[in-house]
Length: 476
Ligand SMILES: [Zn+2]
Image 1 (cartoon, rainbow, N blue to C red):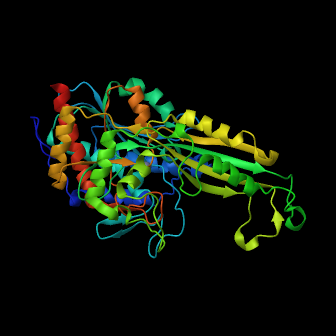
Image 2 (cartoon, helix red, strand yellow; image 1 turned 30 degrees about the horizontal axis):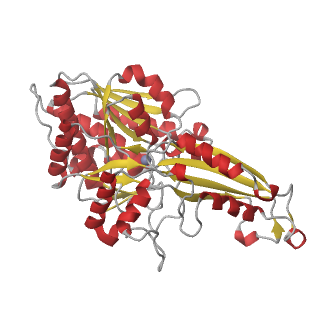
Image 3 (tube, rainbow, N blue to C red; image 1 turned 180 degrees about the vertical axis):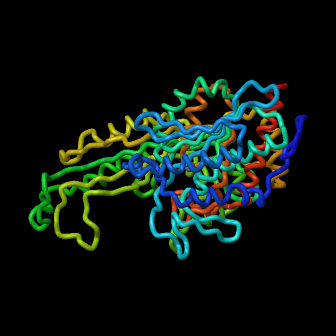
């Protein structure tokens, strides 16, 4: 570490630096099955989330001795890790660096030689669940801060906030934002490190996120199953009733969501951005989807698909219940069918209002008098990026140029990060930069999740440069 009495520029972090200081602990983190509470009801007993938080805390204390590192845990809620570094220089506001340590489940069997909790490095890529979404974030944030400290660069007060319920819609985060509000103080900048882009050759910034409503809907027609030879044709099947209910939500041929309140007008600049992406990537934009041969994508053009993916509502059925596995299926008219619906929403749509609409549409006037119950299991708000302050726009341009040799690019994300909306509402005027390492083949939520290590290093150097600029802008 160098002595630096003046405000100096930080020295960019290299891949070797990252390998030496962070990779061993990141690899250890990758072995912990710290599933998000929505996938592991017994998370408190298994202690995996706590263990992951302690591992990251310990590493952060060693790597950034100047910071105050704490694990907080409100009763019944998942833990939150905070790493607070006092300002250097005259800055008076707070920058929050956000990430999460909870993981999605493995999803299924991983490809040969890979597995969810047994990390493998191939070339400059690390494969394991949670390394890219979003385990790397704590390491990247702390290394950026350590880099500023080592050079003696001015920066605002920084709080790295690593939560553990993100993959469950950040269910526990609002309580922590309330509890931490006095400590966070005036938050003027948020760096969210849980996103990504369409390639690894440039810095991608998030322009919008879709919202989300998850609903479990159960259709019951019998108190117990009956021989289908006896009951079929007389008792309406619960699957057919469900089909009718789904027809209320979407056009089963085109997939278009029929509830107009879930749509929103698409701003012209977002339409223009979709056209730009289509021009950059052509038909290859969705090439890394593992499509079966012969499958036709929805939509007519690449630009239309980009807008469908980022600005239009869409329904997925992410879970089914009430039916036996195919190999033990018998000739029974089953008493019930349950489906878990995941409805993505246009970015500006209010998720609570959308949830209310969906429940009403599903439960009203049940076909054939079946017993229908719809239960909202989670909601998450979308987000539309506010315009960047001139200093931040300049800083990102310069940082992207230095790290990637290219200007930054904007992309909407089809997924949700409810935190961004929560923070925008709480701190009006907060500047938000949402970026990350999730590029082609990163497979967040899928099998074979992968972290591209050179990209982590570039993201670290961008974060460092932005915090340096924030220190100067705040002080100036
Ligand atoms: Zn994530």
